[in-house]
Image 1 (cartoon, rainbow, N blue to C red):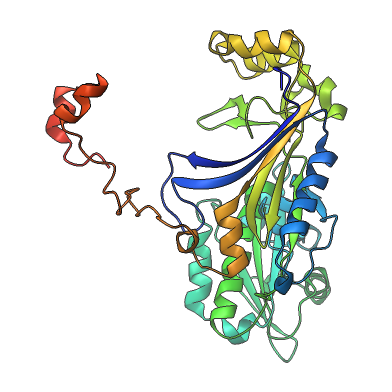
Image 2 (image 1 turned 90 degrees about the vertical axis):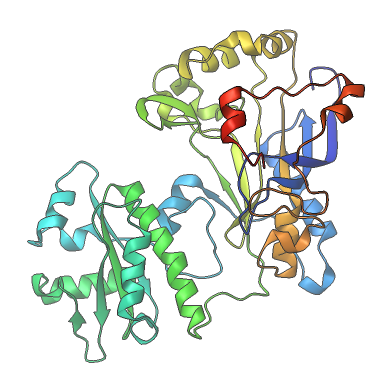
Length: 397
């Protein structure tokens, strides 16, 4: 963009240092788009038009514009930044129901700053879920959550089955039922603590509950439906893992701050939202991008002051921006992941011609592998492994 190219589009082969999972591979394909003199709305409109134009007719029409949701809203309602909006089971704040309830662990969390109690309602959970399923939901959320999930079951006679029900009077029980819109034979999952941790825990439980219900014959998600969603207004910075007093980039350090939050950059950077946007399809991120910083002073301030980075390593970028760079931004769509969703494949391995194994190996070419020194000699390449590593390593895959 600094050099004068106002836009480029490429089908790029990408390599990343990450393991093989059903939705990712160490080698994959992106549709990469970068443009000058564009804003977030322009990138989104172009992406929507591209998908609408290329979408197979037999899959039904693609309606644009796609709905949009802020990061904070997505986490608060669905417990994730890539929500599957094909089904409900939304997270509800039920703190008001438990404010005056004498339950030790609930009162402990509600007495803390920002402490909250939130819930999801699992439709027909009493019919389809077993005790071992509820135990597995507890285990699933332990990483986010110190206190295990509590649950209530609504019986056909209107009563509740739960260790919490004896602490609730009739008005509180009715308030809880109304808050989560529960019905007979539903199961209500409750979690208490800090809002984000609680929402992430319930978000995991929401998806796993849907999987369990569908495995037992209750259909919640239409496999032929395609629900697109833009998730926007991500935080520009997050507390650094292991050192929460320092900040790191939520997306990457070249993402521009929201225009309305620029003043916070110099006073309260943790509150700044970024011009970063993700495109989500049926609970899967299929694309992500941002508007970039094009001002050299702002870029230097973020690198040096906020992120505490050594700008010598990026002096070429700062020099280029100082020479005059246009506003620019873009997006990259994961082609393999999009194709796997389009054809209903359980893994992107099914839509990649030569997928890598779980250990990252290409079985067709048997790579990565050793290369004999005589083969490297014509290219003036020599590989010298450290002595200790050479003794210990038997597999360089």
